[in-house]
Length: 184
Length: 184
DNA sequence: CGCCCCATGTAAGACGTTACATGATTGA
DNA sequence: TCAATCATGTAACGTCTTACATGGGGCG
Image 1 (cartoon, rainbow over the protein chains, first blue to last red):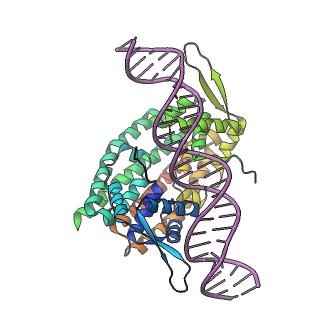
Image 2: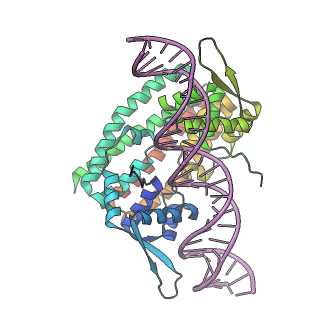
């Protein structure tokens, strides 16, 4: 079968962080709990096993640091294999499933895209996302039309909020593409 | 400890659907796969165990339907206890964690709020959400300012997209509140 | 001395994914 | 009769949550 080694979202989040700058498990936890990446779990029961999995898969390598006066910490860096996997994950074609599974993972891919794969990859992702959204939103509008009669008011409004936020994201893709087109 | 019986997101999604209209497991699956609720798993390995859990907790009750010519199906309805639990879940105070865990669950609560708990509950949720967002967004802006120097461009843009979508949602809360204020 | 932060881990249990399995009914 | 759809389930596996556990270092 050899599909061994599927990496979950949390794994890519960690991998991407470590790629930007080598981190200990504790560092990763602090980032997840203190920044906009709060949606990823900062619990030790999630982070440390995830790190060990990534290490076992050869994506990262940990080295123990015994600085004077400091407690023992293990700092991880991304290996060549991990770097390649990050690039693959980022450049992977954008599917319908990526959109209706919520866009959290797509945004994570985009966030890491430029330092990992270069501006071309970022642009690629942005235009693919823009195209997906363009064919996704009309379907939601149809559902809203169809639901006018049967859905409760709060349900319709919730659906509208979804549509609005997709449209908002569409505008953002244009804005971001303009930035990439402008000055390189 | 007796915390027994915590219900996951998927459970509430199912409970809310069944409240609107009694459903079989198959019905639930079709709704999850065919509508804007695609983000919830429609796999039998998720749905049927979840239904049995809810039934064991006394939230729903299943009755086998043997309509002429049709295959056996088990249709579930919400019990009084399930209804009460839905109301509790919806009216529960909105925490910081609800916001930074992504707003999917909050929107689900809102979607069901009016038929389950009445327009007052919907308004309550909307204003709480508006308030939360108002104190949440400035923090993200600060992070963006702070990250100007260190974050890669795509990372900054990703953060901006998050900020924008929160702002978009803020406007939506105003829009929705206006509707509820307008004609009751 | 006691408390909090650094830093790492483990164990039990719940949940979801994937894949497999069954069987009746409807329509081509 | 063959395929698709209706309809329900189970088993193995992986991951996350929650809670507990450990210990050094700095500070008041």
